[in-house]
Image (cartoon, rainbow, N blue to C red; front, side, top):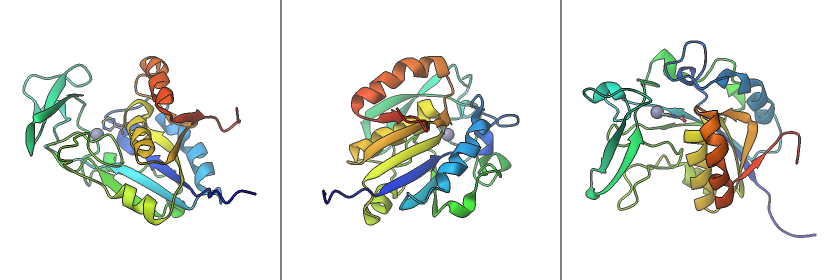
Length: 221
Ligand code: VGL
Ligand code: ZN
């Protein structure tokens, strides 16, 4: 017998209409197909907490190509400056307008079993920064926004974080890497997620696994 605790949390990232076919503005291929699997995970008694996130942008969000003269979604990038420290910058991909606060596209997909969800966290609210992670933006000195997710997980004494949702190569990946950095044992359940660019992700996921995130299957090893 060990006294090691196992207190897993399930995080369902951005399972919203705008990321799903047929009508989303930023559709992840087969994004809607994960819903039955996510619902099955939500109904497991195992998790000590089940949290959903919503990408929740103001209309003037920096990640929308429409807010940058002459820039094309998917193709072009922009430079983001830390508003509190302009020495800190990063380059980020531009997208079509998506998940604008209080629009249909920002709603969680209706098939999702929201009765099982304890908390919904909104992210990407600050128009000045791109924030793929459900925890915080990529800036560090200082950080611009923090969703409060790490405090919730600590309060519940979570030890292990299981991440599913959309998109595997953007918000799921960033959320998993930050969960790991916060000291949680971190898993991505592969049947519960889909990537925007599946081919590129097949290559870059090796870096995420090398960092220590475990990409696991519902079928076991
Ligand atoms: C996401 C692109 C832009 C995501 C959010 O949820 O993965 N991707 N905003
Ligand atoms: Zn977004």
